Amino acid sequence: QVQLVESGGGLVQAGGSLRLSCAASGSIRSINVMGWYRQAPGKQRELVAHISSGGKTNYADSVRGRFTISRDNAKNTVYLQMNTLKFEDTAFYYCNARDTYSGYDAWGQGTQVTVSS
Image (cartoon, rainbow, N blue to C red; front, top):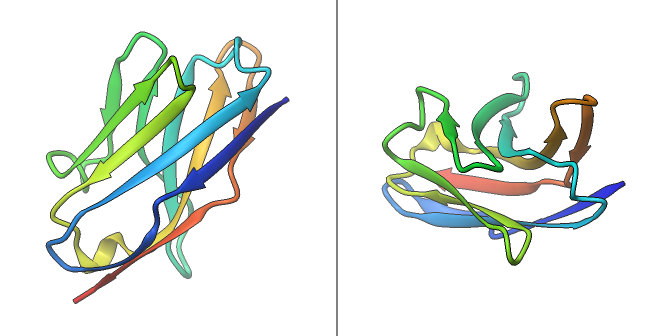
């Protein structure tokens, strides 16, 4: 099993920045994709960004150019740098680790990001 612990959420004014971190532990050898999802009240959980073990990234259209996902393999940690935050970025952000071959999915407990307008 894989355990994920997120940190870095909080309250920020529109236009500001935050960086989220997700530290992975446990059986992480099989994990080949890690990413961030978010869920706002009354909405479905949606992909924000993900990064493969080879470093390939993918972003939701709504965050492309403002958010950057990166990973430090030595620390088993994935980061989400969020710049130029907007009110509509307010959501609970979840870290995800996935083994795309087996379909195994792990989720963190989530961290709240609130952007004041």
